[in-house]
Image (cartoon, rainbow, N blue to C red):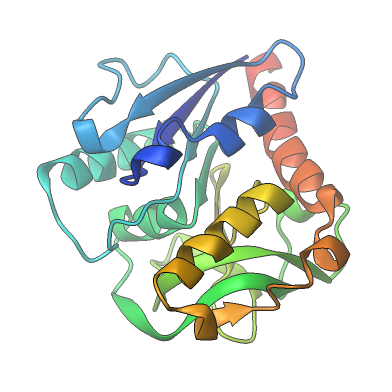
Length: 233
């Protein structure tokens, strides 16, 4: 299986989307190819992959640049071709934008830290997870509404659209970051403290208690299982 990871990160230490690559290569026989969307580095052939994951980014979901337009075009292509697609954080917002979500809003209250997610509907990538689970979040914007092809299936106290799935295609979005491990979460906290923004951090001392590796294992495992089934069919 061949997976494309679209790295949307603008902060140089995050280039390469290492945490997503780590999840992808856990799958035996899965090859992860990383391309940098902000450098307009998307592959010339979009059909050579069995699965696509879109990373997060410090880019505003409201910003429009040539590379974001090209990313939107690629997203619509993958959805039309029914190639399994998973958007994480900014990737989640990008799919919504590309498919005609009405608007995105800057959040009045950021969601940075350990977050309880509540499932509100069925999603194939949540199979095996409890109705409520904890994971890591790091976002200041969120989707306000979904286009008709997408259905919300998770929320949190501060964010009403924490996840969605496509009504007919194997396309999913998650606003949170299950791929982040404890050291990566702690590094995020240190960055906000250095900027004098400690007040926005959610449960920064509770990571060792709240991090559940099963969340990432289930979500990414379910996604890649769907992609493998499509490849073998």
